[in-house]
Length: 299
Image 1 (cartoon, rainbow, N blue to C red):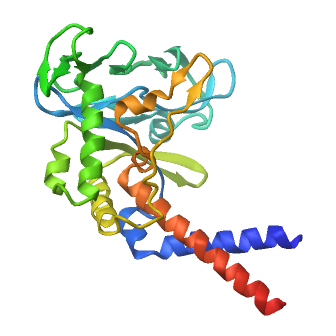
Image 2 (image 1 turned 180 degrees about the vertical axis):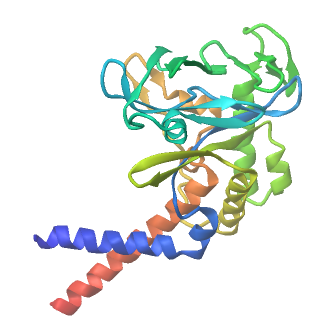
């Protein structure tokens, strides 16, 4: 085996094992969870509850043939996230191959639609946010969230007045997120922001197959524990606090993510992702030193 390939495998495994055994990482992640699926939630101006903003409710739609699917799973809303997994239903009911579902699926582009399977017809929810139209819908009270903000006041106005409430809310989170990490406000003040990150579903890989499960309040609490850990290490040079460049493209204008308040690199990650990435960077730096020491000994 070429030495380079051997070294990449050796030190890559060392980094992964160090992360797995890190007590901070073990506290923040469930060991057997492969992926967390999340979104943003905003405080509804009508009912005052925090509603998730979901652009696509599908979790898996893997086609095999014209009417056969390897995997069909999606989310529904019942005052909380509910997972519908047809492969799991098939295994519970028995009969036929549950890795080849005979189903009729219709969709509206990449979201919404219906699924017909074993005499049942399921309706897939459509997205509850339309950024281009500057409107959303509260999943609790069904109110349309097309409110505008002028001087911090939330009003029902036309699109030519003020700023869309959802955009303003995300800008508020990003401003408060930075203030919290700098020690200027408390965690309670941050969590009263009109927008917050929200976890929806956690995904496990079991015997080569995906298992979907709604997240719990305990899962969300881990995001806030990561926030506290980040605040304790704020000022560390490995936290990417640099200003996010205003990219331009021919005919495309400036990168639009700026208008949502994402003006610094660290704001592109939720607290747990950012904390883990900083840990990863430090391990990569440590590997560089270890490789250098190893080569010097071999010299």
